[in-house]
Each structure stands twice: as C-alpha cells, then as structure tokens.
Image (cartoon, rainbow, N blue to C red; front, side):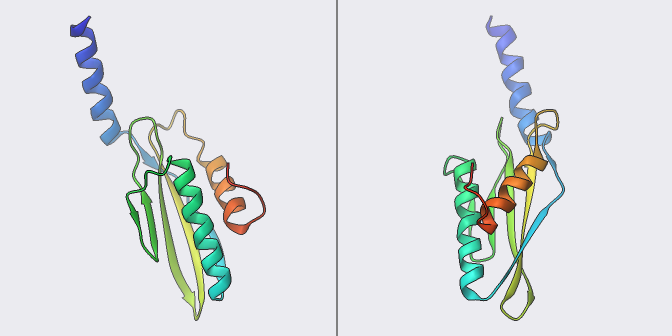
Length: 120
C-alpha cells in the first residue's frame, strides 16, 4: 500500500506546482475615493472567502492568493486609468483545467465587487 501511495503523493505535489493555468481576466472600473475603496474592499473579501482566509499578499494595489493543490489562485490588481479612477482586474489561476470554472468565478467576482450580488 505504501508503495502505491508514495508515487501518488509525489505526483500530486509536483502537479500542484506545474498544472495550473491562468484564465482570461475580468475587469471592474471604479472612480472616486469612496467608490474605489468600497470595490477594493469587496474584492479583498471575495478572495478571502474563496480561499478560506488564506491570502498570500494584500496591498493597496494587489491581492494574491496563489494556487495550491485542489484550490484555484486569484490575482487582483488595481490599475490607475485616470485621476482617481482605476480598473480592478482579477485573473484566476486554475489548478486544473479539467475542473476550473473560471468563467463562473469571473462572473461571481464582477457581481460581488460591483455590489450587484453577495459573494458566494
């Protein structure tokens, strides 16, 4: 039994490092301090909820939750577009293309950040 489990564990650990693929990004725009602060806060809560509060990095312009075994990763960036205006861009890093529904994640992120629905 151990002989079978060891190669399986090794395969899972190496696959976790190499099998994820980034998906198409989704962008939400904001303008003004209040609008941008509210949307950035919703983006942080969305990533945190999706990753059970395990987030690698949070700054004023970046949120990163790296992909790990059986958990997709999220990279959110706040990009200046004009004075007091930003694009908040989120990209899913799929751990596995066979089970990754990045389109649903993009839709859920957009709805959560714009405030049109609750984060799932």
